[in-house]
Length: 460
Image 1: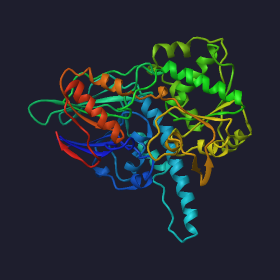
Image 2: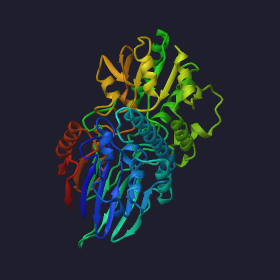
Image 3: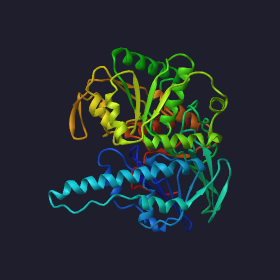
Image 4: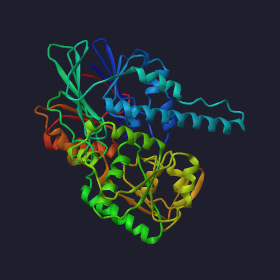
């Protein structure tokens, strides 16, 4: 089997792995790049011919694992996209939203370029390209083995990261002995809100493993909830609003669940929460449509009639409604995308409120290098937002206990279930995190580890 690292091997975004097994050509993930230089990378030629790909496996719906699917179809892919049911249902609104952003950005760049006589800018892909991939999905449940032919079979295991997320076990036989390669996807942590805990594969010859938090430990969730409560109360007492940049998929739903629980427990008084993300609203509906993915606590929460108070949740649908939020000066929580502040409506809220010392910005997810969110978290005194320099005077909180990713200890724990000694390829992490995790794996288990770079090709 040939394995090519076609994206995400030396960074946290753009995951994509190309496999040749016997006569089959397979992708695992088809992710979009984010951060500095991402537009150029997303527009670059694929490291394979999409028209030759037979199958694309998508482990979960986050755009950094799936966002280039429409581009692949635009450039000739006509095979099958294999995912869980919930992943497909999440991807439909997400990819249409991504296409709308591509079209809007291209229109803006074209208008700007007209002044200098530049040619029109074409969008990376359009809604039409999203239309073309939806019939390609082949939906599979967890925990059941399926055959692709050519000596290849596979199974999804619940990864416990977001709704529908999976690790992928792929068996192949190109010699006398059958072997298995496991793609971790993004591994969740135990006790994530709403969804079940991750399941652990037990045997592999090769493992392609994420390392997002490979050199860090999360704060316990209870401590993070306490910090969130303190941040909200302190900000409201100062007379400001709380702004939370949040990923539309997973993190937003977890936050709404936690805030509702806090109100019902009496730790917060009835509060107004504005969900300023039409995509997050659509995703929340998808979550509610898939209770089969919930853990027992979440099932009770959503099925038992609740007489207790809850947050006053306002869905903000139009741009005009979003702009009106700037009239709200204090006592509100505004959750808006995107999670790394690279797009979406959160940038407008930061432009109008980041300079207000009475307000707070609460980061609850990973901020990749080069993103606006990372610059703020790293302590920038001022940042460029929508073309304007804005001074940072709001209180900045980074609460990493809400991350849906496994941390260093949980990643090591995930490997503990293997009853043999696989080779481990450390991917989907910044260099320091990947290197640190590789060293820890060798120290604790003695497994052979590698930290490949994009473009590396291996014969397994």
